[in-house]
Length: 220
Length: 252
Image 1 (cartoon, rainbow over the protein chains, first blue to last red):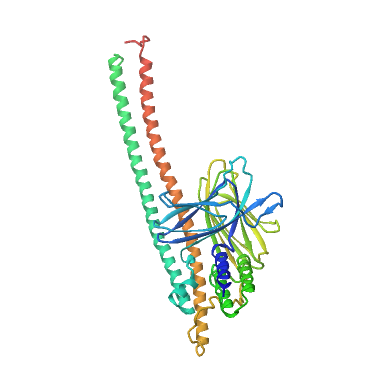
Image 2 (image 1 turned 90 degrees about the vertical axis):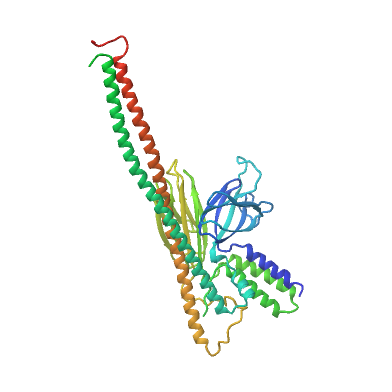
């Protein structure tokens, strides 16, 4: 059937990039919006977005924005850029974290107007999925030839694995937290002792210096 | 009675359904293409009932600014919004939820965290706003989570993954249904655990940021204090010396 493939293709494309039930927000044309995702390592993150441009003539948001793309920049916890790409007005970006921590996802439109003159407003629908929510189960079922119950079991296993990863990451964070806390306590203690010593030493020095000064001036 | 599992699956479920349709309807290519486009579009834009949606975001709210997010809700669903300020000087923010009709449902001033449930929801876009205008210098990092649940109770959903083989369950159908029910309940609870983990993670991030701020403050003020002490000591000595210096001699 000749039209089967394009039909399936169209639906596939629509499903692939359509963040159906997502949140949306407004962003100026030259504005940059950043979101922070704190994730454990070796976790896949898929973000889907869709943009609409405010049309002054019809006073509403246009269905699709021709020509206006979005630049996506993703930084890892060490502020190293792991993804910096330009996508169209509808797009999908994906990355896998290699270090646990706060990853920063920044979006801004590729409008070339200056900040003062660009009065346009964009509506961005964004959907970010983390971990096992990124798995495409029907695809996995087709690849591994699983029955429905096997697929459900697989999904449960993935969920539990993700929860376990989060727990491990939580343990690592708690350890870091404890180290910072102990470091603060140490610092407070040592600084107090150091300040007391400095006060005593300064006092003694002052006395000695003034005594020798007055003796030199023959006042004492 | 099978329940829907993942929200992201629904457009993909549509692919399988459509492919099944294509297989069966030989020779009606044109109509099927239109059907596929319409179906894909519709399912993409209409929220399917009985689903559990969850979006969470963490963002930086600049000083003196306000940020709003919009979430589409279905009729008679439940929307739970939970937010937390995880970093910033005062650790508080103004929070508002505005219904699609423009009614200010919830307004909280200068709170550091909160949980709100809007039930039942009307069809439309709810506006969730965070306002940091009262603060002139400190920027806040805010974490929020929106959980939307479809109609609770009876969900006569279509098959989740219909293209799959099923084990020959005609004799054991009732047993399989039991297994499916418990797997379903397990799935829901695991999702809830995951959501709790997210909230706990936000709490921990907030405490960690606070602690790191404290550490910086302790170091800074200790150094400043030592410098001030040394300056004061030197100034005292110098002043006393100055008093007794020069031609104005006190009796020697």
